[in-house]
Image (cartoon, rainbow, N blue to C red; front, side, top):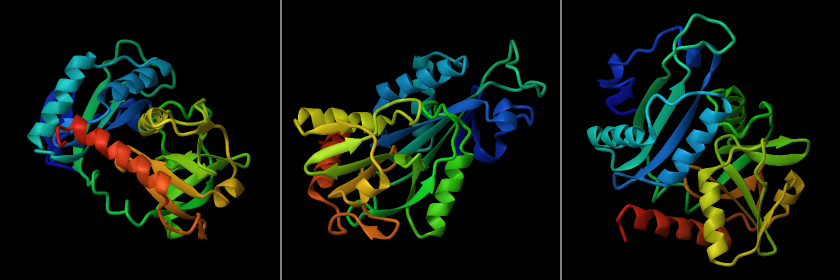
Length: 285
């Protein structure tokens, strides 16, 4: 985490920022969050970030602490104060502080917090050689489309994956892959890109959305459908997408090679298309 954070109207040194023990984010996980990539100090996929943030807050009846234009001002100023060239902004909104009770309190001001972190996005260290994933059970609730603060199941999935030596955990529900612990899941079979359709069962990944738009422009075949672990193991390629990685090749699943065990041509092409878009947005091309 960088030196300066934003909290409820103030830019503060990280060790000076304080939130009430009665904040409902702390007590109940009653809130939502977003992660916004930054390249060359420019916010990436900004419009889609605001749209998903709005959807998440609406679904849990959570008011915004400020309007969208002010929120973007805060995020951009935080980037400048921390001199963030490449990385991401983490932003969190909770329902605010109130006496502990399960029902939503009236007249409470939401808590808004944000911080930045350096991270290599354009030249991610795992992009060339690829990563491994481990299969884990999906233990989450039924509204996975909301970017909720309740991430215990994802933490458990990520920990199980790391304990098995994998980079990411692919969560499985009733035999079908839903998504990664912190990423969207894709496979490539017979020239077709396959990913699960949107529903309450998965988060509407912003990088997933952009990838599908880029693929459509290239007139490549996409199938929006569920797929099993067995199908993934037989696929020609697999990859994941997230805010901090864009696109990463998956070269093994539970220790079994995907394809020939190296990043495939479709995955490389998709990543290159996304890199071109990001560079153009950030004024680097």
